[in-house]
Image (tube, rainbow, N blue to C red):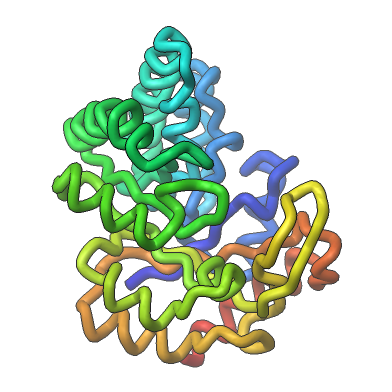
Length: 272
């Protein structure tokens, strides 16, 4: 499996600005944050960014995208518009060389609404993504129906396509009170991508929401059993990427500067 880094930690920077920092960390594979390759960019602009990344010695393996939002909006025009935008995003992912892109579905809506209104759109997006060589991955992430272990498994069973799987995120599961080891066994047949971060559950009431979430730490300093995860990924012959997510934009976590945090993570992962 490959070790990649989610470039969401460089939220306000372009690849031209942050790649020199990554070059010092050891990571060479990118889980590219979608806003760093805007859907509004022209084909020429897109090619310039992708060529620069490649010439700098890096490879885009996945897109940290946000497909699927507004699929349950009461307004059919809004739903249709978003689906077409997401298809353009799939084109962008394919042009970048990515093989996996992230998708969400549903928030607080009733389950029957998710399946009646959202699933048909998700099926269409999955089919389009397959035609472009992209697999869509639903992240274990609070706030979304697809982000719950139960919801993701139901959607995988309903759509039943190799073009849709799960983005296993044990840190998010741990932070929200799930047993990430138990959930691994249920999700294993569908895992197509993975995000990794360490930490421990802590209650927050802030701009990111109210409730328990993972308070991120450096790898090896939290409660996530990272060696167990890698051992079990090998047992299922996982061929995807493990993408390290350094939540440096959360000042409340008091994490070290990005260069230090990424270098520590790469060295830690190399020694597992």
